[in-house]
Length: 215
Image 1 (cartoon, rainbow, N blue to C red):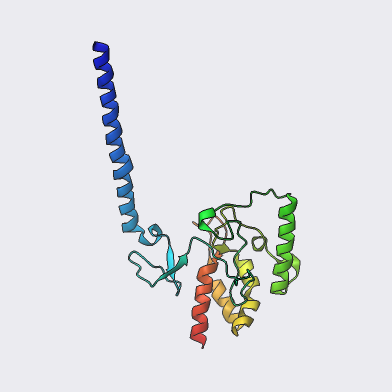
Image 2: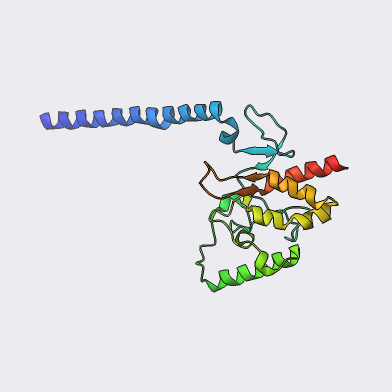
């Protein structure tokens, strides 16, 4: 009988501990950090969304209707998948049909995989033809997908490579478009993490705004 009472008491303690910890860690912790995020970093906490003007939306930032997230890349192509000449192009994506946030992932192909090598060579030739440059001038991020398949950024080298085409397609001066790209280059995080980069979607939104101002 004593053993049974001990077992029941132990089970009761375990159940109460589980309920308390569930409330503290499963509910209280989640609510606390959600509230802190909304208070301190409302834009980031709500998905880093931007409107058609490239301005942050949500939280304290206001803004218009969201057109995308600064954290997730997009394809700037027509219905047939061809690059729109008036826009800066993103890097390739292996996420679903391309930049599918529900299918984040890379190709999982090794650097010596023949299919990957062939795809890279095909992309390099296509980019070189589109931008009217030698194949050797095509940067690596123009022909390779990121590990997530959702990378919103391209290298400054790839962005600057596209300036002549974009400027011609929009009837703008190359110097003007180049200056826009250079103003959008983000430096390394904390000065040493990652690499300099340009957010393609925000760059294209700023480009649309620049063209409107030039009319």
